[in-house]
Length: 333
Image (cartoon, rainbow, N blue to C red; front, side, top):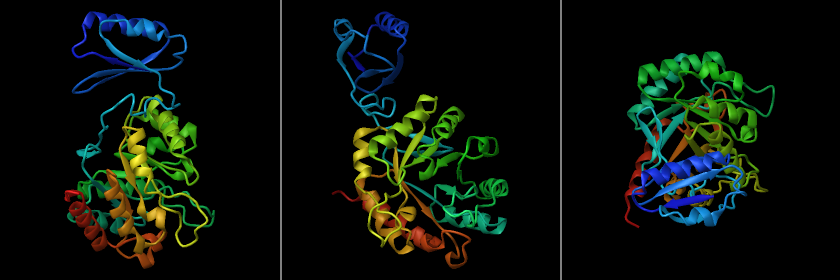
């Protein structure tokens, strides 16, 4: 349920309304906008009398929200949310470039790449340390050592860092990581989502390959209902019958999610395509569709990468993509 207040509501009446709602066992999320204040009621609102609330002098309108996701719903929070990752803002009209290797391999690789990417305009460095792979025989990442090297790259380059988390026990190791990321496999790992919510760290939530938009937003709801509002949705491709790409990039997810939710939306063209030659056109399509940024897999020597070589772009291509997206987003069309 959403309660829309009239401009400049009487403070005493508002306090009384909030106290009454809380006595009914309903959580209240207050959003103060430039034009209106909205109270989002979370919980069992079936016993709440809409007519009773509507009769209050400070109330302009009351609406029931049919969608099962509440905190992530744009009806509860009409303005776009902005997530801060260090000094970097994701959402609110900017376009962020998150870049790094599919796997942290050694100190020289990640530190050198971090400095290069910063010079080319990257905003956030990411690198795989805990690698969730389909085959148990594939490289699983350097794990704790990979996180240590990422943190060292952060110190040398000054870039905030992003790392994937695959289980709650890893949170203690990720204390110095600025941005968490849950992979598509873990979109339905609800215990992990709750733990990430309690951590209060900003998090990228990747869409599972078979998930609907509503299912993605319900996963975001797990994080947000656990106390963490700083969720960034990520489109990374869905599974279809087409074998020419690793997954099928669903560009329509970007504008649809932005209509349904106030959360920032970014895209992962690398994971979606599985081919470095397709990263640029999909990144440009993401920018044109209104994405708040892209996360791309970048490696200085893709042919010798320990994983994700075929989908990795070189730093010079990353620079070209970011320049093209800037031109595209500045176009008056």
